[in-house]
Image 1 (cartoon, rainbow, N blue to C red):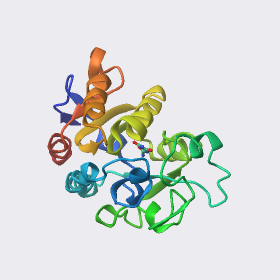
Image 2 (cartoon, protein in one colour; image 1 turned 45 degrees about the vertical axis):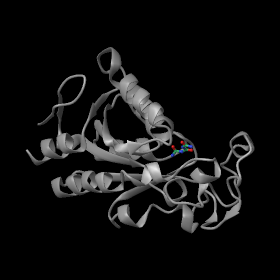
Image 3 (spheres, protein in one colour; image 1 turned 60 degrees about the horizontal axis):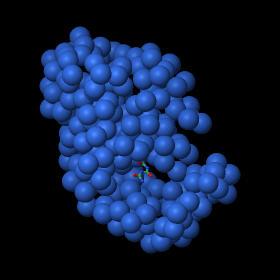
Length: 221
Ligand code: TIU
């Protein structure tokens, strides 16, 4: 067992039953010209966590614990994109529109890819998801069942949107969930702070929070 000195209390992680889920570290959210910026956000905030996410991934790879990556994206014909998602608000570009990095949030487009610095290994699982939560309309549940996974560590973007939604989905499905606080980010620092606080409130009502060093250190033993 690997003991993480987490908040609100320690958690025993069984590396044989654990996986890292890296949520949506895609060019579309992190680089200028993508979906995130089209919504009016400052993407520089998200770029700052890239080295820390890299350190977390490296720690899992070194420990031989699975790393699973997710990508928020849709089919080219948009058949898996609800009109309510595409048509909401008044972004500068909508999902499926042609931007400087190709069509926004469309599977296979350059801007939809995971950033080069955090590129998945050929052996790692990549889940394409049409929603905020990575369990909705994907194979993630089956993948984790096959791996025998019971405990999940989370990193990625954005904290209060796709990361928190997936953590809540996982918690309801019986997983222990741990958020690596310095390996996640929001376009809104106050939303990140609120998410971190609400996840671990009420005796870990959703899950635990810990630093990347605490998680990697625990895996190293
Ligand atoms: N807009 C925003 O904060 N997030 C998303 O749209 N998707 C993810 O969080 N991945």
